[in-house]
Length: 347
Image (cartoon, rainbow, N blue to C red):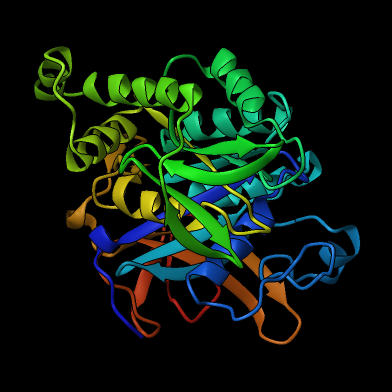
């Protein structure tokens, strides 16, 4: 198994209202990255994340699910959170292990309750937020209606990065405002095309430039002097803004036709926080004092999910925070006050 350093890992929770395209988006990301050789569909009951029989029957996620992919030498752990409020415990598990949330909504919809709850969950954990407006491939889907609804709720921190160019009520291409490039998607493959002449795109580009310039004095000075920002400078400002919680980037895509999914994966690699530069975990010692978990506590880990598998038995999902953990090494369980091997049951 390939080893990854903390700088090359992204832990991403995919959250939002039910039936907004979360699982389809995760499926598309796995397919584009080459993890799967067939694009599963929720309605067909053959997606990677919705593997439970009841999920296939209801055609929606009922528990958190984990899958991993590699993109540009970076390991991306996707945690698909259920959107139904009856299964909020599954969403809490997924948020507990992530440093960044992809808050998913669909083009043409307003600001839904699921997005609101996902924002609150991300804020309570202090993790970064990306907004993904999916289902842009349908007829007469209004990306900007949804963008404006989000902006009305979350304010000026919302920042467009990938937006659709629409002709005749359908998406013609996806425009990456960072690189100033447009792409058409044919059979799921991106083909670069000419930047369209569109006043709305120019408006979105201005919003992006102002947002990324506002987080860095050098970029702000260059922006006010009227000098164009390079792609590298835009990514630098975007990354800083995401880490500081001053920018909420927005990406348009289609989980069915795969439009813009590769651009979203690029953004996760370039701009999403990694475990090393994210906010440190905090814990409480035996005296009730709050402590910051660092390498001095190695090894240290959290168990964020436990399931009972009929074939394997009880399995616990663990996120390592510091040091190295092996199956035969004893570890101290802060909840029980006892030591046990990782091969044993943790909870």
